[in-house]
Length: 275
Image (cartoon, rainbow, N blue to C red; front, side, top):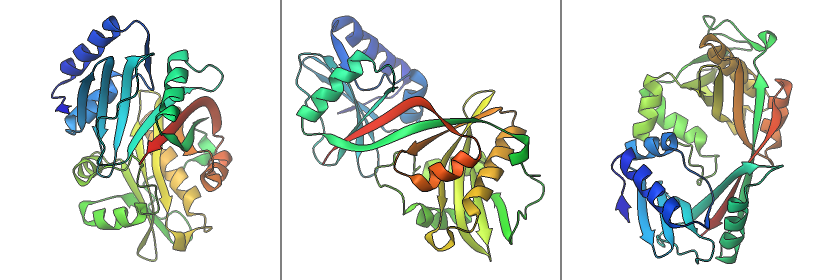
């Protein structure tokens, strides 16, 4: 596969094939903003095929594919040395016909459903906020922005997560997030027991990612404390709303988020895997 070096190259290739293939099907229309972050990280590649083009985001242990191919074309996998994921994002009540057709083709090509995430959304409420200048929350819990010295401990905490989770940053990206103060940690008895990422999506909306609590410290109110810190940080940045993606089977996170008014907004992300 060939590496994408700049956003104009990606956009030119995509537009070229959109014009060339009137019956195009795809699993997710990757916008320039999404592509730019992958290009910056040096992870975006492409392969031109007989009846379309496929882009690949190369993660550490797998790759995520974005197909833009003719409806009549067979899916040809460009990489066979690692597990491959195809992610389809759509509205539950209005699935794009192009995505629907590609989903069927992936299953016929040996992919099988892997995980289904729902996007949940809430308006930030004043009663859920805490004073950020007060580092001690309650029950001897201390919050702070993560530092480089804590990187090994953070990755240790994230080990409970799915290895095919593409939102887990590599060390270079993690250091950038630390500089931006996007990684929050929770400590109890001088032990790291929880972490999360907070991100500005736009001027009014923020997001929460990678919220995790150590198995040894669960059912102690730590996830609730993490949410309060994250919501308070986003509110301070001017956000009114917050979004989060969550595995529909993850009842622990869904239960906690429900207390803060999160509701399913109708958007679904389905991942299919081929090992």
